[in-house]
Every structure is written in C-alpha cells, then in structure tokens.
Image (cartoon, rainbow, N blue to C red; front, side, top):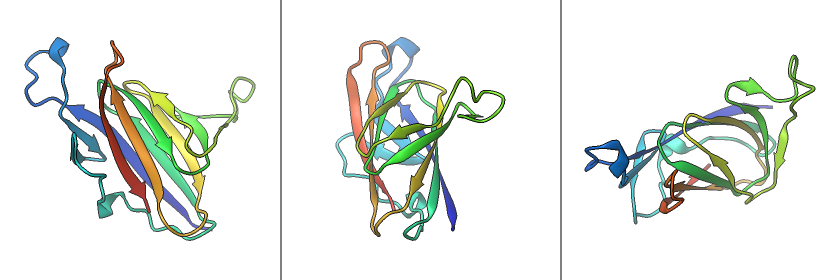
Length: 150
C-alpha cells in the first residue's frame, strides 16, 4: 500500500485592500497556485497526486486566510485530525473519534483551522474538490474555486 500526501493551503488576497475592514479579495490561492474569480477550475500538476487504486491518501488542509471556507470532496473521506491533534487516539480517545465524511458533503473551516483527511483511491481518474470562500462576518460568498486531486 502506498501513502500519498497532499497539503492544501488556502488563502484569499485583496490587492486593493488598504485596511482590514474593507476586505474584498479578488485572488484565491490553493497551495500557492492562484485562481482569479470567474476563471476555470485550477488544473495544475502541482496539485496532482499519483495514486493507484487502493492507495491511501492523506490530505492536509491548512486554512491560511481571513474568509470562512467550505470544502466539498467528490469522494468518501475520513477526518482523522483537527488542528494538529489526531482524533480517537490517547490521551483524547474518550473525547474524540474520526469523522466519516460521505462524498459531496461540505464542511467549513475558519481562519487558522487545519483538518487531516484520509481518502482511499478508488477507480482511476480524478477527485473533484470545490472550495467556496465566504465573508466571515456577513456570509457573502466571494468565490467558488474548483480543482481536482488526480
């Protein structure tokens, strides 16, 4: 069995932003790869994971921005860690357990949060990933960015 690892670092940038309370991002990053609002899905070899059917993939998501972000993976996943702490292992096993995440079930991250997901590579092809960026105060959606994990 092969274990592959992906680290998705997400961030929103506001180049015209002179002050914090006037935050209106126009550029969004996934692992340092920019996506401008209104463009096509990010297809970049730096986001690809070469996994074979049956391989286990660890996806580590680091939220490094000011927005609230909603992630949706097109495959079943299990959240096995949050904010650097494994779920369901000593000394916290009485208070936590891994969380099953059915395919296409969205979950939210706020600034500074980290999640570790385990994905089993199924049939060959790519796994669609959607990341939506929302204003953390008003909930207004700034952008939807799509990519794939290969």
